[in-house]
Length: 231
Image (cartoon, rainbow, N blue to C red):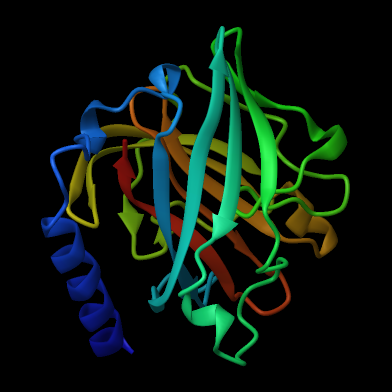
């Protein structure tokens, strides 16, 4: 499994090495300065053993999620989301993705009171998982300070929890991009009632770097890792 992961990551990094000049440095991308026409591309991973601290097994599946900024007005951004047609899940019969792979979603991202806020009345998303009426309506953009942790594989070094936690990580590299400081929001309160858990890694300076969702029942899950932003 680790060999498969290495080969897929190597392919992704090789592809990113041929980025054109219009691809910004992700470490310099500010969530407050998204521009019309920008495209954010994420790659899908699947993992297992969420509650097992000794395991970090995950693989990249060869699927790409593309977000595009359709409009921008006074810190209100209309974002479309779609899974690209050549993604593996479009031809693979394995059932590893929980959402509708063919759906194209549009949501407003609002910056209010130093938070990224979503209107949940009509909210559907590939990037940010929604469980019934429960989701994360906003992400605080201030820096979290409760506890520094490490990002390990598709999980973190924070102990298993069935509650929420506001953490941070420093000097993290992902898919060839380096991030000096990131918020890590663990949203596991639903797991206390056998629901899914969710983790979001992000910052005001870098945007959303990773989202993941995982099952209390099986310990398996999936996530989206930011690969590139293109103008």
